[in-house]
Image (cartoon, rainbow over all chains, first blue to last red; front, side):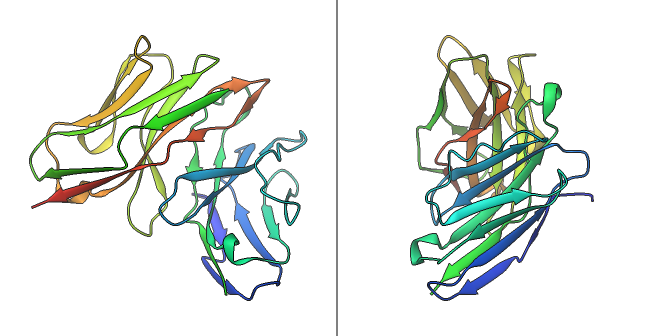
Length: 116
Length: 115
């Protein structure tokens, strides 16, 4: 597509429920990132996918968080047993990746998660 | 290892006056540096980037940044602020480490523009 697409744009859930957030990157971008932005905070790195390599999960805050990327394209971030501190905007970004990667990111509009 | 420090959490200017948003970085490798802007309830947009070419980088909407290796700085400037510049600005450092690029974001600087 023309840009990075994320869904849902807004999600309200109850504490303890599972949620799935979806990201559709720019076509041809091999690198995909998930970041979390809490109110008034910077961006916190969560996970990084590059092509068919094993993802870098070093930023995931707990084992309740997981992500997958199917067919090197669409990615889903799953949060199990949500807690109130998980409330944030979850941002997905993609980039060219590979040898030409300069680290320039193209962001989606984000998924705002509210846990009641 | 890499990190970035944005020296001001808030900067307040009057419309028509210069803007200076300060950023210092550290990186074990030759870094690429970026400034992104985020308007309220919007996604992040790239303002400009430095990737080892000219040290003075021009971006969109009249913004510039100068890469100073000796000072490990990448400050963002604009000669004359406009009301529409009011937003959150993020300085970002990124360098290849074992073939991996994971950009690191600063905590952001909120630019307030007074009429």
